[in-house]
Image (cartoon, rainbow, N blue to C red; front, side, top):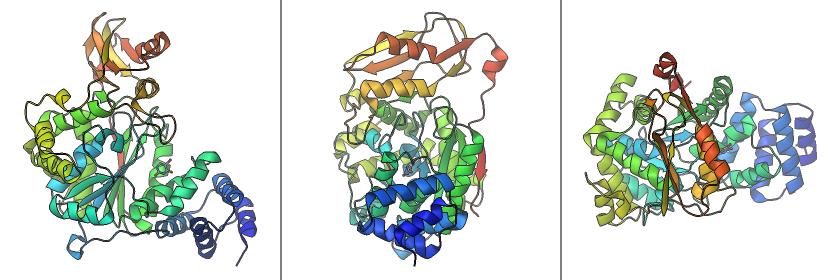
Length: 449
Ligand code: IUR
């Protein structure tokens, strides 16, 4: 067996590590018997030299078994599913998809994250609901899944401890953007959830981690292969992320838009993503015989209100009072009687007239992040009330002076430079043909191996 320095040298020189060597490395990382400098050097060697499919599969499997692996009752064998997104702007898909899948008979132990860089985090969104507790033990998760069918929770301490160590070091050593390391990190956590099926929403575009379709496809193929390699049936959807998903960005505003969607009034792009991702999972579990039938089942659950009932039950199971949950889910609720409204709102007016050709989601997200909707480093609090509502959509016509964005802010207030950046995020033009063509949201599906 090689020593740790020999293993670092082997990877540094571009050779393939054996299963035993990867196992030894992950064991040493978990037991903290390896120096931080050695972890950093190995991460950089992996970043530079990459890993072949077999190495990535072993890395993922060893990371997955570095801690607790969840278990489920036998009768759920084919039903336990989850979704993972590589991060978007206004991406509230989980809030609609988890209860819709539960309404279709799935068990959904959704383990989500917090906002990262300019992208939002599902846990931050849910925490804008008073009383919602994202921390649930494995036993509590099993109880909620037995009674409700879905939960949306944070990662427990015991799940994939190797990833906690590696992720922190990746940040410190500029090795976050390595395909094998991203794959090991994401899929090990999904494998430790003991899922039967997983669907990945791999986004591409200016507001996504992957800037173009080709790099998103490469990441998706790595993720799908590693997922199937740890025994989770894994598929992926490649979806465009240039603007925003839906019309609201910001934590409480996105909860409101999700509830409106669960009441049957959702925007088309959000519904398209929810039904596409959901149909793939329903087909993988065998609950639906085809993608089109799966899509119909998900859409019926959302439009017919059974998904809304699941969301209400999930909120109560995770600590929200019955009164609050019922009020949020009632037909004509005043959301601001429960979710905090920002102290100030401001509308921005279009500077030209014509058709809305483009809204730059990255700029919107970056400015909102600075205003407190997101965080610049882990552990910082977020302001749940900060956000923005788009008052126009691409393809629509606008007049000069017409409001196109409502900004919700507190302290800090937006600076003139930030307002100018936001104004430049809107592109208006006279080409109605260009405006009428909505670029396809879902570019491709990758089915399990
Ligand atoms: N999310 C994860 O869980 N791991 C990663 O490496 C990235 C996002 I990038």
